[in-house]
Image (cartoon, rainbow, N blue to C red; front, side, top):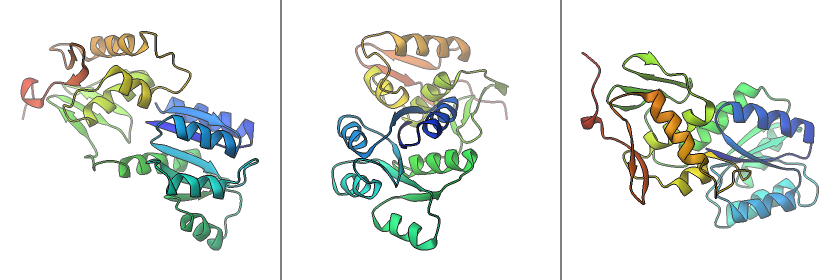
Length: 228
């Protein structure tokens, strides 16, 4: 999942970004409305976490521009004003959700994930292929009943591939949705991460490499199933 975090309080923004990255999200951070609109125009984000009181272009105007334009991003609006009318105003602007400050990090994470689930076709709470199971909410992956020790980025790649439902996912698509803008598109970072993930998943292989295409998870019929 790729997130654009728009927050003018730099210390808070960096703290939130650090927590979200630990949860496997790719996070780009900007501190004003002008930069938010620019980033949203050149990148595809699953969720935009948008502070309402921004310098440059006010958060209300950023929200309005995104929701009336071609953006497909879900918007979670943040504000220090927590009255019911403030929440109504934020939702009337087109925001998908609204969270008053101060907020608990656990709630912010849960709301971002909920918005991301709403952005596409509904997914089951547990993603499976053969004896491979991934619980995105609990951040737990197992194979054959054994828990897998994955880095946040490896988990994010596995979750994205499973959610694709057997569709071939290109390296470029993975880079766009699982990494942030700091990733160099000319490096082998995707290949290296997939290689490490494949090694941790063990045999028989789960992640298929498609020549000149990308990667996909083998269908459940091709993988061993848990004993019943």
